[in-house]
Image (tube, one colour):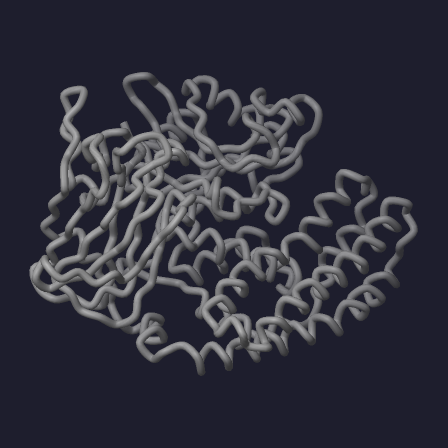
Length: 481
């Protein structure tokens, strides 16, 4: 029995209209290793569509994962037994799996079942030998515009789906036929990608020349229709939101009164509007078969000016960020240093520990590195008046620059709402390092500037929306060795 907890970003910017159903499960599965990976993968998805040269799709996926310290492994599968044994062995190694079904065969997908063919990616995150079931993550069983939720299928049903899908893939899309993909770290060293790394990558790689692959695909698509136009609108226009989500966070760290922040907000609107005007016109003409090879140069040239402005903005932001942000923060992005989760070897105590159903929900559960999606892999406080707290003793003073808190992901109503992360060297005098108010995210990553404390505490003043119990699945405290 195995179940990996993979965040679905239900309250944190998941938006199906900015990434394809082939890439979305890869993006979400990458978040298993580092929550922020999802946002970087989506942003690189947009950069790939707009500026990347014409490379194989899965090669492109691996390029993006490599930037995050991950890699995509391909396994060729020949039969049901091999598929099941591979699923079990890979999940036991705690690597998330992605596999592709044909929409036409997906009985739980009302809007495409027996209506349309096409590859649709799902995540495999669990299996249970006792019940002969496989747990997947998908959006199709709850609605096309929803985040990925878990769905448990009997093994026989899962195999039938896989085999029916392969019949179509073998004849039409061999890249998806008889294949299983999983994501794993490239090396044992913990890699931390960051907003700054993304900005640095954009600047250094000089993304600027509009790629004409998408325009060519539209022109050469003999069956181009309104449905296809919606998909190309996502790629040509909507996907750029993924880039600006990261730029938004970078600008938030600059002085709010800075005139460049106002200029950025104006540019973001201008850029989105320009792409919308240019490519909406192109797609309308394509539906009416009113475009030809001349459209390739016409539309790439028409959009080039705003892309030049984008490049200038990225360079300006990079210069400002390097100037404004302290050396202590920039040191966080030193690739040569080894990162350690000091929480894993810490001593931990809590204000209280709930005993219920024959189980004690001990504080030590939040640092055991499991949080695999089972209800017992968590700490729960007693149902008493706030405040509640968890305290980590790192045994000596440690400079921690990043904290990760994984909330009770079973329901947003169970997330911690108001709390502080505090530091102390005597367990008496506590310094607030981070204060969170009105949290609505299942996982929070916070960075702090250089400081050293032996004791770190999660001090909770509003534990949930429904009761007085505080619930935490996991805590990580990252610093350099």
